[in-house]
Length: 201
Image (cartoon, rainbow, N blue to C red; front, side):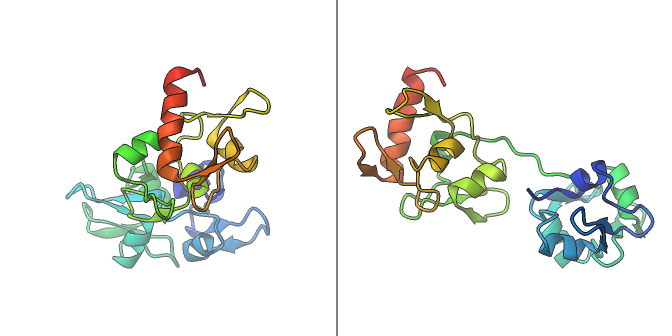
């Protein structure tokens, strides 16, 4: 799974001198751009903060705006009107992990974040459309707050387990109900909400 820059720093993958990252697979030094392209770093989950305006940008937007230099790893610090190293920016809290509370499928539906036709979930922070498994992996949808009963075993499954067992189509969000019938995402959410209200996960 992709890391934030803060996560990469915690794992000792960032060279404080060069601002480059160590690819754990190859051991080579790579730029922030290369780390994003290779999937090592998730640019949507890293936030760059402006200490004066209080504005927060995703790493992608900060790169587009020229606040982060992907080649040198330097970050423009508005309060000092100069570039500082990525290591210093992390230490000062200018570069942080994106904070968001994971929500259940029914909460996401009530918030209008789920497209019932495509089964995609909209990330309210980035506007990006994600399928259910990507929404779980990014932390937008909680894997454990929604339980799916498995009629064969009598056990309840987490969302990702239900996808693995073929109970939910990760692309469309369609679910196979207890009778073996396919039901739409909207019907599935209503059914899952009922199950979760009347049973223990």
